[in-house]
Amino acid sequence: MKTKKLTAAMALAAVAALTLTSCSFDSGKPEGTGSGVPTTLNQIGWGGTTWTQNFNLFSPTGVSVTPGTAYVYEPLVRMDRTAAGEVLPYLATDWKFNDDGTQLSFTLRDDVTWSDGEPFTAKDVAYTWNLVLAGETPKVYPFKSVEAPDDTTVVVTYDDESYSDLASFATRQIVPEHIWSKQNVREWTNPEPVGTGPAVLDKFSPQQISFSIRDDYWGGESAGLKQLNMHAVTGDAMRSQVLSGKMDFGTFGWTNAQEEFVQKDPEVNLYGFYPTGGSDGVIFNTEVAPYNDPHVRRALRDALDLETAAKVVAVGYGVPTAAGVAADVFKSQLAEDSEQNQDVEEAKQELAEGGWTVEGGKLVKDGKSYELRYDVYQPYAEWVSTGTIMADQWRESLGLEVTVNQMADAPFTEASTTGDFGMLSGSPLAGNTPYEMFNSVAAISYVPLGEPAVMNQGRWKNAEFDKLVAELGGIAPGTDPDRAAELSVGAQEILTDEAPFIATATAGWKAVANQTRWTGFPVPGKDDYAPNATLPADAVLTIMNLEPRK
Image (tube, rainbow, N blue to C red; front, side, top):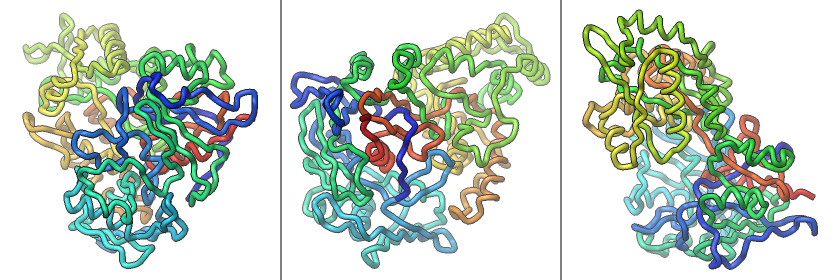
């Protein structure tokens, strides 16, 4: 396993959070401050106001999975979070596709044990994935069979060429056959989880989970952590408890975090944003007027000052390239001149070249006028704030009046999937690799208006783009990086020119850390893993590399 000790500081994990109550078996009061070296980490948990003791990765019907499984159950590979699409070893040391990409063979480490001392072997991998293939879980995997010819070899077989599936193994966690095979997986809640990861369940209550850290972990000893406590904390309490040092870290968006948190103690208080490579932003419905005209789409994009919007919203995200990728993640295959800069004169010229005028705040062409509306997912406050800022900029720069329509979950989901919108907030590019990201807006993801679309909700189509993406998907990982980079750049150039969306914000994970007791959090854009406790491998690397502040 590729690990490293970190000396720079930034933030750490989780996702959404909960409420610390008197029911907890431990108040979470930090130890080690001023009286010795800390050994316990206090983390804000997620997933509800209370937890049920269920560590079944495949979640029995009606029971939510308890936070912390990424510390217990591990995958065969992990992703380099600083290099788009690069897969790194983890429980597997090596892997190889056959010549036509229909069979993938993994070679496993031979020094891994489960937390109960039993050896980890290829039979555990085959058992886990065969549960999915047999329909015993809610998950679906794209391969048709998995075999374990010996203790350190796993062979996965597909119907068709499937090079692009390799990255997905970074989230496919493995469970122990010798325990799970004795249970009814559809009903069992796995209350005492046994995994290859460093965390072993110590205590459980509906508001706090305590894990002890193994001293026989295959990845080596931790840099100092002995116990991890996850607490149910929610609302304003998340900020106040991190500020006070009662909680060491959590992951949540914090508007004005620099002023309200970091600047109070810059040496200790840290707020970080870790880009995934993709983006959030404005999705255009390219099958309805006026958004079916690339002149309009480019004009609306060029009229914006997105850097200013990011600073005003102040939750930590950066501005992606015009093609919708994070420059830090795609630095080895980034299209030239792809930065997004406001150019109002260029925007006006685009409208003129398309035959458009602005009259009374509306777009007008051939005697028809169009009112512009931006549908925004109301629960995401930063999306709403960004939408309001963009509407102000469109008014000031082009004279356009754009209504920002906040939508609750149900109507937003209906509009986004059926295509009943003109402009919509969303995630234009999503995935673990360049191929996955570009494929999310390729023809393979296209469905007609009215039919439910999971990806490519803007119904954009471009034959040249599809050709490049198809070739990119047909390159076996690691076999032709120069051609892969060339294809990625070509795809970015088409996205920049066609503007099927406006990428307003880098997609990623937010993290908050009070380093009074612990240092060594991964640095965005520098360290190759992210501090997110829901990401297998990344979560483990984060806690194992934390160092006590002495």
